[in-house]
Image 1: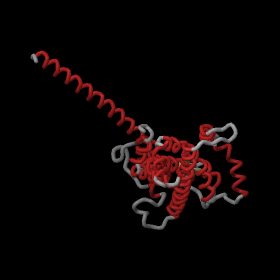
Image 2: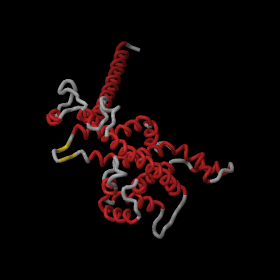
Image 3: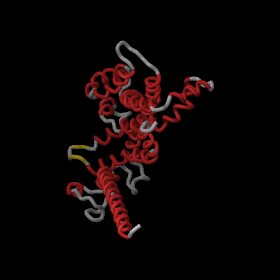
Image 4: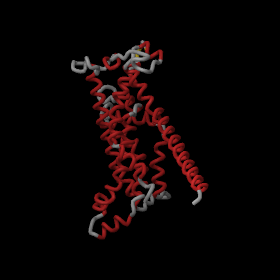
Length: 306
């Protein structure tokens, strides 16, 4: 090989490396920018909870540079370091709302995933016919329930819950939240089950397992990442739901979103208290998302490669 050919190969390698590094820098730069955009609201909420009133209005951003941090927002909830060990009526109310949110969100999300997975499995494995409706029509019917605005159901649900004595109860919210997220779970899990080869179940049936046995031992473990992803999505939707929680509860079953919205008074909005309460409300979702991240990724990637 001549020297000229060697030089040409070296130039080509350098060009490829430069192109590779340019692509990597662009990709990671774009991802970093997007991460910054997504995380900035959380940063804004945390810093606002540590501000005094003048700093909130001035829009100062950097602690110890633009403003001196204060525990005023957390003190108003009884969650500051100097009040956390003392009795606090506000903290007791916060814990009651927090427990209500935990119970209603977890129960409704679990119930929706169980019922939705069974319905989705049936739609993906068996053929149904109700009049002119087939499996695809039934699936679309479930998804079409999301098109209906919640305000349309306000008066009927209020009258119904008053007649059956479910106003201001956790069980009332659990039932309503389950129905509200059930279409999403069915739609997600139908695609999950459709991506699992039926040959696996046929082999299990040949080995002597029943349909339920094949579902529980073969299909369910494979579809578990998708179920976790559907559960987390349901949990986020039910945890943040405000409209029906404000409409159907008053004292005993109020949730955290209702408490956050109540941080307004005749003198305006206590932004520092609202920010502290908001961060305390979203913190459990952040922790759950970090812990179950690998299941979310698997659930999103499921079905991409069969």
